[in-house]
View 1: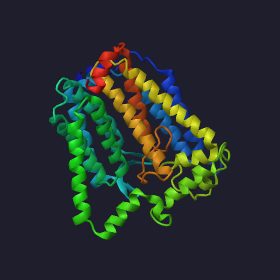
View 2: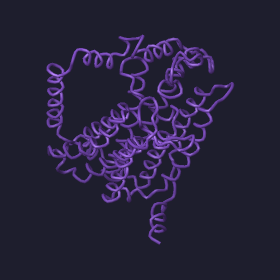
View 3: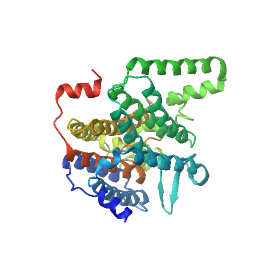
Length: 381
């Protein structure tokens, strides 16, 4: 009976879809499917991604009917946080190893990455935490407490090792700290301590070969025959697309396998090669449209929780997008961060559409936000 009551509570609302937001995300998924489509021979990536897309759409529409007041309950969020943390620990014993990282639970031909779900959960937890403590948000302890929420999954993911997902968790925490109104002086002090600690390690602890690895990590194109090979091939693919691209299915870097992982980590490079500068502008415009729609919903947030959650989702998508683009053009280290909605992978697609679905569900209680109130909410003025 209790289970039935919970299910009825979860789905107690009618859907109110933001079709602009949904259409833009669908268009990006379409670009990803076309780019990973082999057109000839076996096409497992395309077929599996198509199935994942259908599942993600179902998840989106289910999420739009969720009563998000349930997600404001501390006991619900803490329970989910403990469960997800346990799953991240279990990965070290039962996780599937792929590309050197033990980050997936393998279920037949499909795999699920708990780190993706943890990103969404971290957004919810931080939105809950900061919304309840808005009046006293400038206190230093809120940086520490919120940092603990982020550090637990950060280190569990980093030890897999999955530096890319760990980095996204950090960016979510850092971005939500900035918009929550936490004292910037206190935050700067924390980062200063971190910089001093790293400087001490660099001078007195790290060996020359370890320093060389760090430098290569942050400048991958400095070793194009070794660690920087993937980034180098990626920059060639992006540049060779020129204005209008080589045409769909005619990208030589990807189709001839010079560019590795073109269905996942480097799908933007393969897309840019085939669609050119024009296609890249269209893709960037679609992401800008998604962020604009998210922020439009944020401005109508009924409470601090909805506004902070929407801001967290925007930070989540922007972080993935910026890090991946920087990685593919050689400006950032290769970390395995995906392009939202576009890269191959069912778990990240599921979480992204679920995040949007919850945001649309929160729109049902929307209210126009007064400009002065909005300034106070996000800038702490």
